[in-house]
View 1: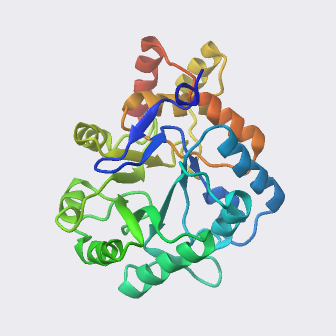
View 2 (view 1 turned 180 degrees about the vertical axis):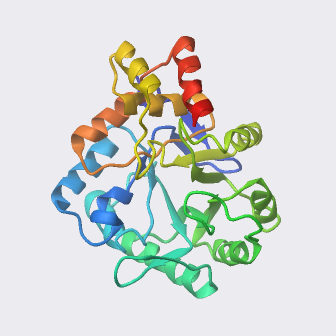
Length: 293
């Protein structure tokens, strides 16, 4: 099979020439524990990234506040000069404290400095897509207005330092407000087999051709656990986490995955999930997981 078939087909971000395979890679776990400081084995992280590219993955999700700086520095070490078809997506809207705490910050200074940090550590003149990370941890903050921060990103886009803009941690109204300022090509929210709060949003964005990119696709810090999930996995000769990823890929053709890892073995397991096709009976069983949650 071609890489496109191996990696769940391809998707073109709306209004752009950026085409990626639907199975991508999230770089967050290349930093140390709690996404802070250096990893235990930097050489292993470099090997993982090089295998990612070798496997045909062309969508890499990162941020300079991972580490901070560490993840982007490892990406640069492993992959620069980058393959021409590699789409690098970063995010702005937070910074790290001295003890590793996450500090939400959408001031113009933080957004601008954060972008320049990304450009410097990745050795790029422009980032393909930058997601504006709005307040909240794994859900949108009701009533938040993203337009002032979007205006800052739009200004950086006009300077040629950002090619396209996405959003993270937003609801439908916040997407509408953001689009008053600049086009949005993707939305990155928490979503998985058990966390189905964004079901309607996934469908609405798919209708418009906007990419939906779930973070915490395997449950995040509380990994998915379900008897139904285990039973389906056993029947298909797959792992529960592979089934959970495959369910997401079949949820919508406009949904992109960016599972991350610092382990080669775990990487291969994730990549194999893109080739797993779930039968209708399995989908019905798995839908009960979301209903129960």
